[in-house]
Image 1 (spheres, rainbow, N blue to C red):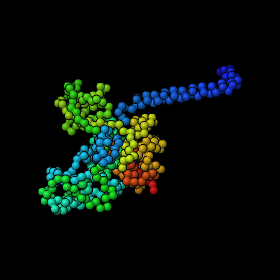
Image 2: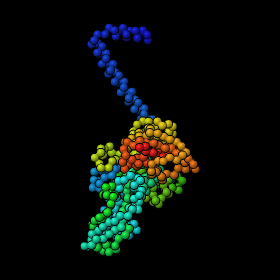
Image 3: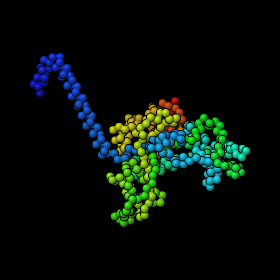
Image 4: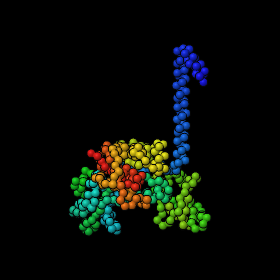
Length: 422
């Protein structure tokens, strides 16, 4: 090797200018090709590891946006309303003549922070209707709309049924939605109503934050389908296997059935879903399709787009999909920086573990429906996350609630709390 090295050095000394330029160009070309080859091999290496450690269809994320009802057609390819009832036009006469005990006039979005929203629960407002040359007064009550949270619980049940790893959702809008309930009215009003009358609401100090005729969308669509073909008994002759065929089953997930216990759900390579239950008759099943989040510029919307999507890189996918234990602050920073909304709103300053209670932010637990039987009972330590706010608005505490709820899943032995430093 020494002799070969000496020969190369001697030859390089004798090169003229043109030969040196040719050598330089050849060397650069060779190095660029080597970089491409190494890069491709590294990418294939990472892909092969991901294919063996991460289940297919595991990268499922929920995105949400709030838009005017009239603009739904612009987004309905990928998005649909969380509550289909948001599309209904509630007419006062229809509401009052309905047999339902709770007479809901409409849903409204109130764009305030969490502390102020809590104080609005059961707030009484006054509404006025002009009908038949008379003025009628309605007593209205604001009540937090819990139907959205029930939908989130159903989403969690679907994740469990289809054996998918749960991901904390990030939909702040649903915590600011109220239903306006008619508490008192003149019975004579029903006889006078013709339909289509407008109710004028005295919003008072809420007027600047009061938003009507908007709907919350997410990238989930619901469909129904019955079992296809023969319903076969299983080997033990006790349960039955139902088959439902789809054009593409990869992003389709079965919903729990209210009348039948579901034992197993499995997808096949021929785009069908096998459902094992104790029912031998054909059943109409409900499915949710969780579509990929559309890559689009939402900056022109009045209300921003939120999601729980994890930044797509090799380390994040390996660690977050396989429940690897978090062992240092660096990994906590990695989790925080994986979410675009958290990066935009908050910067982690410090982490404190103590048995003493400290003053912290008023937050809500997003994953309150998860029963963790392995949480330590009795007295536990607190883990406080101190943040510097990069943006301070009506959604700051919602984003903090999201990340603290997510971190709580990683640290069940602690009670996680959030602190915003001024």
